[in-house]
Image (cartoon, rainbow, N blue to C red; front, side, top):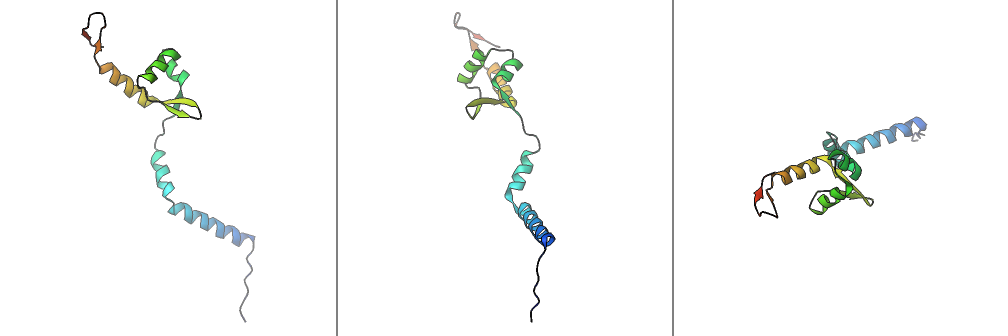
Length: 107
């Protein structure tokens, strides 16, 4: 005659815990999350960017039209500080042509 094993609550808990642990260890998501955990850059709002650079929201909107990188989430506009800084550094290096004199002016 075969012996019948009836698991108790602790057996079920241990089995579930082991199964979840095994799934998480073998998950490809684990490695992707660990690489992003090094330092995620927080998103900035339009008001925060305007305050940081001491410009109006109208000026910030004009910068966005001219190519300032931004991200939309749920109908809201957000910026990454590093992208804004890179954009402004690039724009500063470009020569400016004075419309009155048609001469190149270095910024």
